[in-house]
Amino acid sequence: MLIGAHLSISKGLSYAVKDMVSKGGNCLQIFATSPRSWSFKGFTDEEINAFKETAKEYNVSPIFFHASYLINLADKNDTGRKSVNILIEELNLAAKMGIKGSVVHLGSFKQADKDYATLIDNINTVLSATDPKSLFIIENAGNRKIGKDLEEIALIVDKLNSDRVAVCLDSCHLFSSGVDIRDFETLESYWQEFNRLIGKDKLILWHLNDSRDTLGSLRDRHENLTKGSIGEAGFLNILKISDFKALPMILETPGFDNKGPDKKNMDILKSLFRKI
Image 1 (tube, helix red, strand yellow):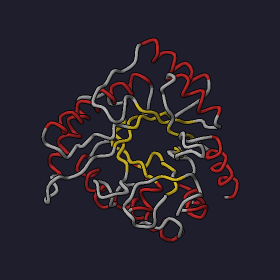
Image 2 (cartoon, rainbow, N blue to C red):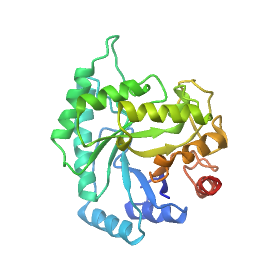
Image 3 (tube, rainbow, N blue to C red):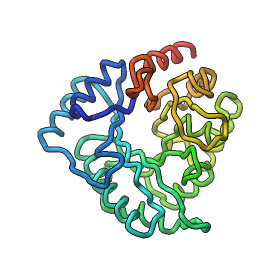
Image 4 (tube, rainbow, N blue to C red):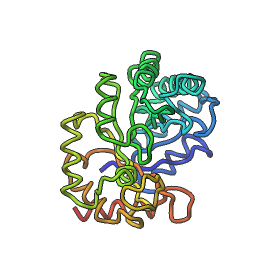
């Protein structure tokens, strides 16, 4: 099984890898830069080489970036241009570091008419200016932003028509958008529709997070595994679907000490795997 978490790089890239192993994980997600800033400093060659060596030594793979929260690829003005530029930097850095790609929240439409043309043009600009080894990974939304509905994700993936575009599903977001993953038949039906509209090979990772809010709340507030409204049943249902078992499971939980994903959350996930 591939289990990991989103961890801080405040103590360095290599430390994040070792920290993941100490918590019991073997895959990882990190930020390439501050998620609430447009600045992009990058890393020195020395830092990158040490990171790659440490990840190889500890057998931590795959590793993903999560893109900045400021990104809005549906914007045709300054925010859109900044979003494109920071993602170009990030995806090129990902290829250099041996990182799979970047998980991206696409943003939101600011006008009543949904401007898919701007969104698609901006993503295509990113793809055309970045290393083909890096993936652009669309994350489903748990609020009113782009990607809340499966049909919308399918439309975007279809318009992009690129092998470099993949999808990440977040359990909290699914639940918040109205998909009751506590019911196995509901989740199974969703997955069948995903496969029909998008193709199962496009899904390359899960974000596993419980929810502080009720089904269909359209509020994206994560809770520790099995301690929120989704509960144990929802996560067991995810693990019961054979297509999901080999995918990386990345935790973005608040942690029982409110310091981010911790060993206790990792141990809960392992215990769920043992129940399948």
